[in-house]
Each structure stands twice: as C-alpha cells, then as structure tokens.
Length: 328
Image 1 (tube, rainbow, N blue to C red):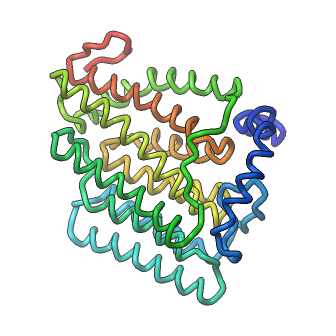
Image 2 (image 1 turned 90 degrees about the horizontal axis):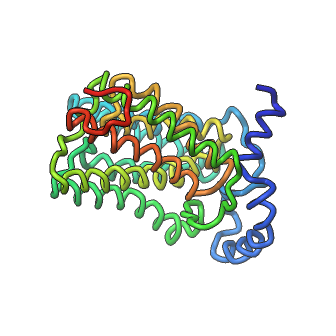
C-alpha cells in the first residue's frame, strides 16, 4: 500500500469532507469553554488535531510499557499463582514510581498523572474475575466493578486534576462515509465467516456458560453488549487516549492493545484467540484516532459482539442457529 492510498483510507475514515469540515466552528467554540478550568500548564489534549508530534523514542516508554505489560499478569495469567499476582502489582507500582521520578527530573511531563489514572482502572478491574459468568450475583457485581473502573479515572481527571483528557463524546462523527459503512458490513461478514470456526473448533465457547432458558439467553445478550461497550469506554477512550497524550498513535495503540487483549484472554478469548483480538484491538484504536467517533467504534464492536452472542447460543444448543457454516 502506498503512502497516498493509506492516506486516502485514513481520510475516508476521518470523514474530512463531512463531519470534520462541518463542525470546525462548533469545535472552536467548545475549546473556548473547555479551557476555562484547565491549568495553563496542562498537557496538550489527546483529542487535539494540532498536537505536536510525539518523539518515537522517549523515557516515558519505560514506565508505560511496564504498566501495559503488568496486564498480562493481572488479567491473562490471573490466578495461576500468588507470585504472579504479586509480580503484576509490583510491575504496576514500579511503573508509577519510575513515571513519578521521570516527571520530577524533567524526562517526562505529566506522565505519572496519566499512568496513575490507567493504573487505578486496571487495579479496580483486577479485584474480580472477569471470566464469563451470567449468574445473577456476578452479573451485577461485575457490572458495578467495570463501571467503577471507568468512572473513577474519569472523575479524578475531571474534578481532581481539572482537565478533560477523558471524554465520552456520544455526539459527532456524522455523516459516516461510504468506507465506514462498508467496513461495518465487512465486520459482519468476517464475523459470520471466522467466529463460528474459532469458537467451535477451538472449544473456547465452553468458556461461556450454557444458555438454554430464555432468561439465560437474555442475560448473555445484555452481558456481551455491556462488556463490549465498556471495552471501548475503558481501553480506547481512557487507556488509549491517555497514552496518546505522551506517545505517537502507533505506540499508544500497541500499549493499549496489550491491556485490551490480556483482558479478553481472561474473559474467554483463549487458544488462538489473540490472532483475532490483537488486530481487532489495534484496528479499534486506529479507527478512533481517525474518526474520534465513539458511536462508530461502538457500532463496530457491537456488531462483532452480536455475532459472538449468536455463535455462543448456536454452539451451546447443538447448532440451533442455521446461518453458520460450522456446528458443534
């Protein structure tokens, strides 16, 4: 792919002829009041189109990579041994200490604060197993914990640190381009083609509970969609956005991907699942960096999760859904 064609695809996703041009004046108006309660020395916004390029190599990569890697121990390898758990929290604490020292020495600027917000969310998630369980108690307990993992960093950022690094912009991003609509159709097609083969031949559908009664199927549907929505709010609009304040998009994307995929592994996407979840996490980060549209990345994710839901019901009920090419 040439640089020109890659740029054309990015422009199509960003909708330069649509939302970007139509809403420039509104965005300028919003910036005026958004900066009223932000300190003058605050960092550039991760959402800014005009932020200065980040260097490819920086001291901040050391604690950021350490924090991101701790997710492998806290989520993907959770419960394998007490030593793994201690090591995971140790890596997280060490990352924060290094970031604090780098900020004090001038090697980084505000890195400790942003890594702290990410770490707080990760620690909150680590307090409960996220293995698929739709029992009523776990259904509400997991919902509360995941909601707190998004809400606490947001509230600290907004009301303690007095900035707007974390924002959940439900409006904007319209109209979607033909490329964007086409990608949604592609997501549905690839999900239909690949996910049944992955879930059934690898046996990972057994990581999700059996669902035969209507109320179990309903809870599974709500749970799959709620976790999918949370994924975007936490991994993309919190973790990715905070990393992007300090690193180039591709580095921030790799850092959030490690956390994202580690969580999905614990959730149940195991065996050769990372061959699917790694490109999915990277694409979600890249698409958001181009569109800055929460509704769009949510649409992509929830279409994917719709197929996941149908495949689990299909596999757990002896191939009851006849639209798939693979049955248990």
